[in-house]
Structures are given as C-alpha cells and as structure tokens.
Image (cartoon, rainbow, N blue to C red; front, side, top):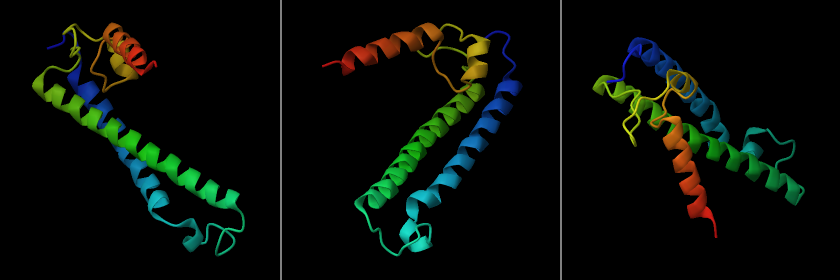
Length: 130
C-alpha cells in the first residue's frame, strides 16, 4: 500500500476519467458505423471524386483508431480502480516503488513510476529499430 495516498480522491478522479472516456467512445461509435453517403453528410448520393472516398475512409480510420485508444484507456482505468480495491494503487508494477503523487494526478491510471516508464519506452524504441 502506498503511503499517504488519498484513495478516495484518486477513485473519484479515475471514475470521472472513466466517464469521459466512455462518452468519447459513445460519440465516436456512430461515426465509425454509419455511412456518411447514406446519412446525408455528403452532398451527393455517391462520391464524384476519389479524394471524396479517401476523405471518408480517412475519417473513419481515424475514428476507429481513437476508439481503440479509448478502449485501451478504459481497460487501464478499470485496472487502476482494481488496484485501489487491492490496495496496490500507487505502486509501480515493475520496481514496486511508490509512484509520485504528481505523476498519478497527471496519469491517474499509470502502472509505472517515471523511471520504469522511461526504461520501458527506451526498450520499446530499441525493439522497433530495424
């Protein structure tokens, strides 16, 4: 258990963030599922130029990507809420050291202290190099 953490404060912070993420997902889902040509978003019943089709697909791809990012955020938030229940919130899962309160305020669902997060980022970049 992390010393001096106000679990109620972080629980409320995480719940608020969870609602915001759910709202973002709810707003984006219809945009991904609907066909803008059928809903009247586009002014003609069919695109007259390949750029029109590309623009529609680009927006749909972007929105799909954002939904997947928000879905991952939601999983991370739920995991953080579970760590509060387990009394392990605020403890780095790598080094088991305390996560700085300011870091938790900025990224309330983080699993890692700043040092371990930076090490993971460096390692991932090295793996991605060709």
